[in-house]
Amino acid sequence: MKALAVYSHPNHNSLNFAFLQKVIKGAEENAHISELKVLDLYKENFNPALVFNKEKRRRDMHNDPDLELYRKQILWADILIFIYPMWWGRPPAMLLGYIDQMFSANFAYKDKKGLLPEGLLKGKSVVCITTMKGPTNYPFLYLRNAHKILMKRALFHFVGIKKVKFFEFGNMEKKNGKQKEKLQKIYLYFKKYKGNFSFYKLF
Image (cartoon, rainbow, N blue to C red; front, top):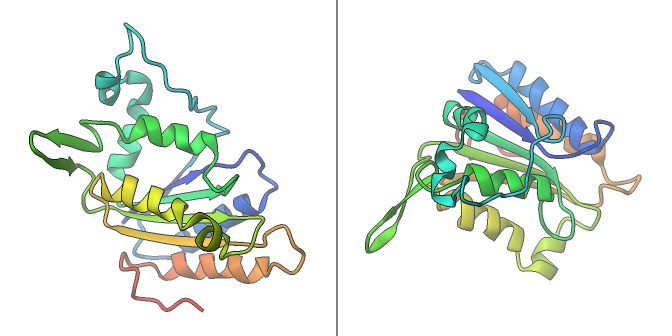
């Protein structure tokens, strides 16, 4: 399997970056993952702003030459790994801008007359690793799982990706937030990952 890790945090001294390092370490020790590429959106200076005008039409976004490298990365990968914080109950604007531009019509999905659109990214898997200042159950209790619905149903299922796994870690700004245990969990997950989310029981 080939894996693409999309990292969306501006600080390399952050816990999110530590999670990225655990993903890399686990993947390096996993014989089932042949290669891992990392896309650091902030380091890349990715422009999250959508621009539509006479020269750049929305219906042509799937052919935008400025996004060609990123499209190739998605097509290349068997598993997409998204690492990001939750800010105000949602992913960072940087990641949302990446999603807006990359999961475009005629690349990630295709409209069909009279039918639901056809997802064009079938067969891929997704793992989302997120950190929160609030408690782990905050999205469920206060936001009615809006984050998971947004990412899983409105995005990944829409483009044909059915295997979606979430790690939502809360209380990450507290000294007793069990950060080491959670980092270890991610390391072990990717060390043993075989493409089937149910193969390994997480502690």
